[in-house]
Amino acid sequence: MFSSMWKGKGISFYLAVCLLLALVVGCSSNPVTEKKPNEAGQKESDLVPKKGGTVTIGVAAEPDTLDVHRTSMAATSTISSYLGAGLLSFDPKTLEVKPNIAESYKASEDGRTLTFKIRSGVTFHDGTPLTAKSYKETYERALSPETASPGTGVILGAIKTISAPDDTTLILELKEPNPSILPMLADGSYLQPLSMEAIKKYGNEYGRHPVGIGPWKFESWKTGVSITLVRNEAYQWGAPYGENQGPPRPDMIVFKIIKDPQIMVAALESGSIDAASLPAKDVKKYRNNDKFVLLEAMAQGISSIDTNTTNEILKDVNVRKALNMAVNKEALLQTMLQGEGEIAYGPLPPTIFGYDPAVEQYGYKYNREDAKKLLVASGWKETADGIREKDGKKLSLEMLITETSPGVQLIQSMFKDIGVQLEMKQLEVATFMQMQADGKYDLALGGYSYNDPDVLYLLLHSSQINGLNASKVTNKQLDTLLEKGRSAMDRGERKKIYSEIQKLVVEQAYGIPLSTSKDFYLVNKRIQGVKLYSGLGIIDQDMWVNQ
Image (cartoon, helix red, strand yellow):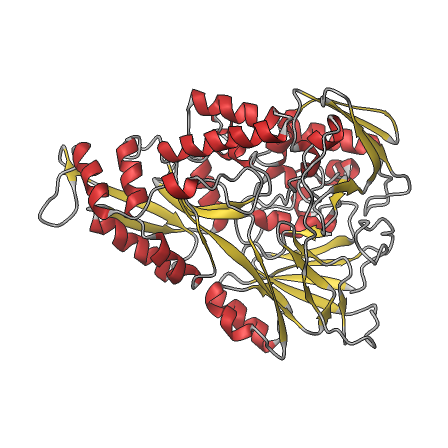
């Protein structure tokens, strides 16, 4: 399975850059470069995969629920990806969309109708059969106003109608052509089919009793401690890219919740967990290590500081521009990531389709003096204590964070250098996300992981203000461009639209892009067959325990 395993925050739908264009209008696409994975495990030819054993994985955040329709937490996606499977899948070497639970699919000539042939013999963990109707009911639940799904419902918003004329035929009629819908349907977490029987049985408690079709079954949840999954013995529909098409080889996976990064590293060292993401500052120690394999790949997203554009101070574009110019991104990259990444100048990372290299020229550069001039132009005057004032009010802002770090302190110092007082408010991830969604914040240190530029529609379109548009951006010109970007079928036209979008977003300073990091995962060498692909995350369908 593809998993957003061990991710701590952000939007965790790993969507490839394969476009519907190639399927609908038959145009040739650019040659695809084969992706090479990092892989955990020894290379000795005498090692034969075995069944049995427990894999313990450290995760930095606890899900608020395992009902994927009622959350947008990455922590939920991490666990739920093991419980489900995608309608489609990605070829990890080429990022092409391939059949999976849908054994075949086709698109109409106008790109508005998608028809899927659902494979027979697939069952939910509770024994009920999977049919096209299962998908219809699942997607309709996610789209229902009563569910008010903040993640799945938003992604499926491109769908106009859903029909299942028989058990094996699923038809999705789109509101308009959408080049990113097929990659979305390869997501095995938020877009997985759910057991309606289990939802009826457990009601509001379904999030504590999830039932999917994936290789792992939910076993137990000890709040604040761990979530345990067990092997689905009935599983015989593994994704086509894996060697193991049947039940997983380990008996059990335990996700141990460890919120402190240093305690996480200590748990790896002691052997109480087998695998976890690794902070960049600890990477050097584990390269060429006898006990562990370090997997690494460039991330498919950016870290940034979100700005609440409804805030009285941050309504002013000059203030937002000044904050951008106050940040020395090179210094921050070294402090936060030990240089293991790249500076971000706009809302998209260089690792996904649509990125415009020109942003590196017109994006805001570190310039304290110009930042001060912008604040003066907006009426913010210097005072004896170094914090600017306007109409008797201090230029003071609060930034939400989920953990303290030297990087956070550095940002605080950089803002003070231009006369801005910055206070920090540390929160649990779920509370952090809720305060952002409610607009009860000034600034928030966060980011996202995504594999298609349509992420900007989710984050910046005015229709998403009660969803993932936490910056509360309302801009008619931007809305129009975002709508064009998600419906354009020509690859060249789509790229041009996203170039315009990036320039507009930078001009308006909607947020402060910081960096694109590397993902680092540390795996004990007793765990074999775990692979990491840039853009897809961890693939562990062939994982086994060498015990």
